[in-house]
Length: 305
Image 1 (cartoon, rainbow, N blue to C red):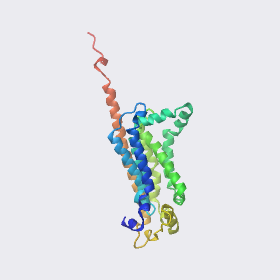
Image 2: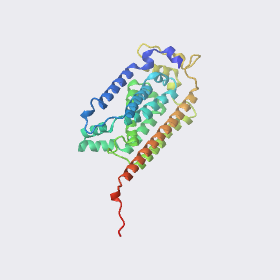
Image 3: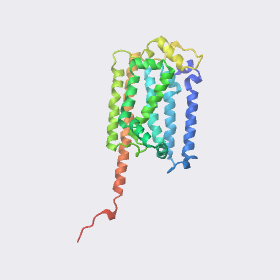
């Protein structure tokens, strides 16, 4: 990692414009859950745990879309895959856990109408969300698509935002931050999580078991230089020695780096989905206890004498 600090300046490494944007979002969130909370119907104090989740979500998104990992992800695909894990498998569910349900309910009530309900029942459908995220994720890792996106700043940025939106839809049905909005039963939520794990496997398998390197972004010096030039501030010289040579940042052979990327994605996906299954079971048990607790002495039939 020292090689990066020796070759790049503050702006290239730390993406201050992203940091500023996330800081503004953080300030707005804390104003929402404190000073502005009384403006929302049924608003209740937000737990400290949720506030911590939001800060962690901002940090995870910054690591995924900025930080030195952004530069490293343009040199080694394993770092690029780590970025995706932070953005779509850590930041996204943390955001949904951090935002209070009364805010989601206010948004639903604000835009509720017969027309919008029909539209949102299609967009917010579990099946649509299931195939949208996993389809976009798999398509992203098709070699031609990957290399094309990496060579276009605008297309890549748009695709990242689309992936984030699709990830939010997918995680919505797993976490159920607003149970009244298009709910799945707890058992179906568990099955939904397993289905997501299955559908993402082909993309990981493609990367892991490919007999050769797939992406010219990491193997063709000309394409790599072009991609790097796009992600650096104007006027910054591309250090070609980072791709190969004695001062190279790539400490793994290209195919091994590619295999590690696929393994990282699959393992981290399994871990995050495993935690989510535990979260769903915890909610399930809590509901069962609440239902059992509604039974009072007066509800118990007395024996006739």
